[in-house]
Image 1 (cartoon, rainbow, N blue to C red):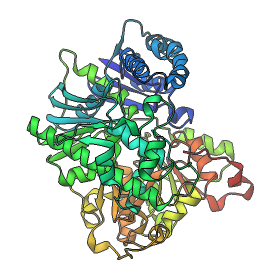
Image 2 (cartoon, rainbow, N blue to C red):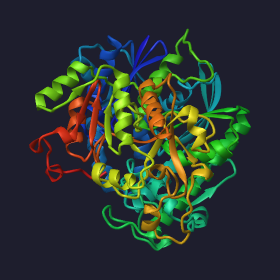
Image 3 (spheres, one colour):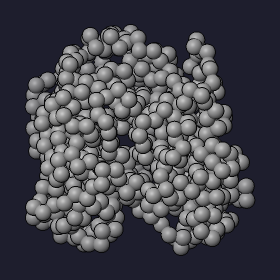
Image 4 (cartoon, rainbow, N blue to C red):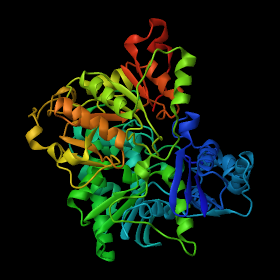
Length: 605
């Protein structure tokens, strides 16, 4: 049975195809349209997934139930009337024109691609999709399942239990009481974009002190031992649809909402640290309660909050579960995959292939790939001088050598990643040992805020030499402390800027100000190319650790096609581009082939 899953019309629209329980393809629409967090119907992602599968679907599953979501919007609007009328009236046209007609949208898109959709369209609930995306690809025969996000139809968090092909949601937290919305409120108040900038808030937190933690717990929510809570809605404006926080929130913290380009102050750092610690406490309480009621030793996580790798790291270290697996596309994009998996496993005769260790995500390399013929054609069409190496081993060796020399290398190899993390297929690689590399990458290549940390990628078999990491982290979804033997002392009373530029370890470019790192571990069986790069880099330098960051600039999604990779390479200060068997050295380009950086306008995040 071939099942097509679709998520759309909120943020991070995506499509996925599952065939007899095996994940064949998955991609976000943004990778094709170049619109970051594209919420439109994923027409191009659907076309790609079905082409990869080799035919039309037997069933199409949408990742949530629009009518139930519409009911929540209506009931909320009437409950807070008349204050929310302006936002309600602004939202209604798109609902009446599009969102209430999902089956028709799907039929039109499939017909345009040459496939029949009539009588094959089904709907999953939002958190059912998250739970299925967490459990079914996991390596566990049975596991507890925890999903946490902003809101689906009514649920904002669910506790579940999976066993074989069965998955049951046991309890839920309901809107408007939401950990995802609480975290997004602080994201908004600190000047970052909601549903996009939460990871910035997480990265800012270590620069601050948790001096507002008690205020949050005492004034903003009533938190119970089982992790459930009720928000004090007097302090939030999201029910009215226009903004997340208002005057009372600002008065409580003596801090107005920051405009996006205003300077970040120590108070913003302290707010970030405080809500991060509260978030971790809530996640820990939910997990402990879930373990108590299920008795399971394995936990699966999904939903937007499951992308909070700091909370995940603490849950792994302090939580009650022996093993934790997090869906790498935990947000709404992953809902498309979860919807397809939920439907397939509800059918008679459905099977799961599990071995207790390897997951079913194929390393999250589920997007498009491009061969040397297409890559070469792009380079030739642009007249770009290049070198074609004999095999992937030679390319890996060249990348390792150039990074060891201090170069920054853009990489396009194999199938693109599904989810928000770059895992080596559409990545920028650089030397983690460099004391200047974090600033160089942020300001000259990524064009983003200088405080933001970079993640290390390390050989799985040598990760313990550098990080206090419990278990694997193939999807960059857990933080871990840098080993004490590799740390360098820093001043406790240093300013934010002083802490930012301090050399904190012998891998300073990937060591955050609190000596943590968002680690990606690489195994030869899952990611042979990147494993070869790191192995050779380790041989050359004695340090099998590199920076791995997504191949994009501020305001754009990661590159997908070779032409986009070439464009990104030319418009930044990257030194080398490695696509398939081809290597391009910027130093060999003519001056007129290198555009002025100012010729390109970078959108805000």
